[in-house]
Image 1 (cartoon, each protein chain N blue to C red):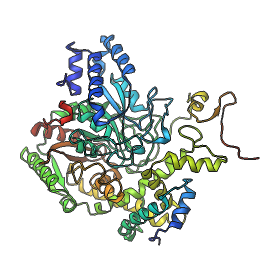
Image 2: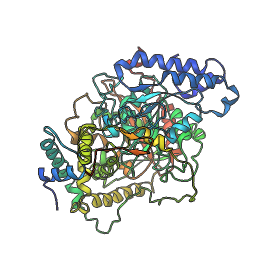
Image 3: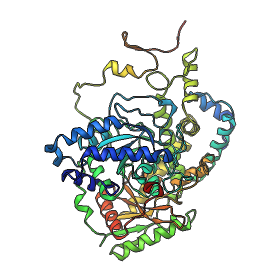
Image 4: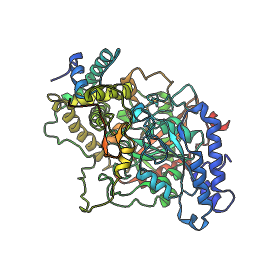
Length: 99
Length: 485
């Protein structure tokens, strides 16, 4: 069981989360996350093998709506807030992916 | 026009033509202009559109009777989407973002005659308990400018406390309406999970997020909740069933109500001044005819770590959408993956990064069962504690926050200490219950204390009834220094 959170763990999750870390963040965050995880020790030690997990606090399931076609945001409005877009072609633009 | 500081007084004064929506709007904008330099509650103001909207209301007296929030100036937390007003969620990531739609809660306020006057400061993506995590600077508590207003809806609470507006919307994931309401001496309601549509609320933790009102009194908060509540086809988590009219409950008393006090969770880490104010409030309610009973919440000691495991896991998923592609901030880079990494480094502040990293860790292969799944299981135990307690009582009373407003800078570098601000609010959030914070006096240092009343799912009515009765029994007539200048 994980309890010792290391700077290697931090580097791994930063890569998974796609967050570059700069300055003193790697050391600071590794220390702070390790300290928080230590406070979860009592939670991890609870015997809850027979307890179902709660993902919805009131146990409700998502209702289904009728499968009707309805209006949604226009393409121009959706593209309008993008940092870079080609409105005519209807595309979000990003740095080149393939050469 | 300082006497018109409640929703009831404003709507009544407009209907009887003692004033107009435009006058009320001008007055609110003037107070914001005069006071907000010292408070910092607002990130954006909308004076022109507000005055236009107010003039349109004045021009249609035939509609007035069906507008419960006729001419009421309202401030909106900046993680609630508004067309025509920027929406940043307190983050550089969304600086300058202008949503192409209004949140459902905003649409419903507009349809009820409310007049949005601006967007309020908050912790970045609602992650924090002091509003210090905003990328645009802190908000100051109107009661003491060297202290925080609480958070994350600190701007909304401060704007109402300073009487810049009589009503604001906030969001509450683990206490973000109730705690700042308590620290600023105003009323705040976290509705039952699913009671109010989250369409247009910038997502933080989807199994916990709620939108609710902050107001100068219980009746105002209840009127606003009634307006924004109810199912919405655009939010699949909004639950069916129209909300009851809370009006009748406002006149009810506490006689015969059974109110549980979980003495076991009040034993450590609570300021003596807070406990004293809470004790006086309970004695007042008991003297008015309520029965005060002991209840136990055996798993509440785990509520803070469980909350931060669940909420960060959900946040790491929700915030993956900020990738510099579709909207918001983008940092320049030569490659697509480099653009993601640098955009998210520069766009997010420290607390948001910490939570994304933590949430990613507890969901990652090899750690999921030990952390995330276990937290969800203990969440079940916390929920069952409340279910068991509510078999014997109608409401559960606790202080809203273990301390009154704390100094700016005191906790912001120590996340664990900041997280403990939430010890009385996160359990209720994990259980999906409704709760209200109502002012219950001042500490000797003249800082407000909040009384929190939690109810069974969907029983906002009983909680509003008790809070309104308490408000009559112990009127909170004090005003912060910032409101009287």
